Image (cartoon, rainbow, N blue to C red; front, side):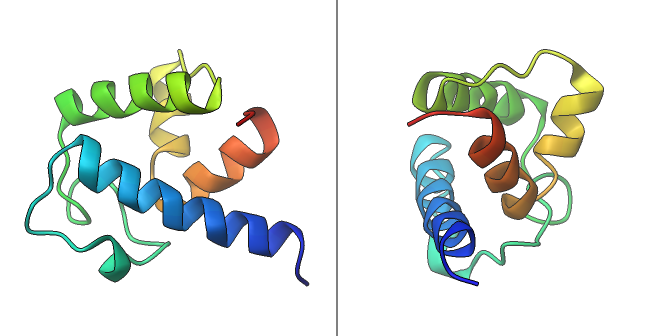
Length: 92
């Protein structure tokens, strides 16, 4: 059960800190963000401008390309979905 799950948990942890820091979410503690909480809307409450900033950060940090808006919505829906996508498509 370890291995991939450990790597995903570690990546999810890193992503939370990156998102909070990059998007300057001062009222949010990364440790309190559930992995399955929506990133946009009711979850972290990010908007489309934040989405663009986040995509740029992810492309730079993990060498992934997210160009299709429908695909981006799926990938960026939760910390979990984002971590899974990066693990299967990105590189550190």
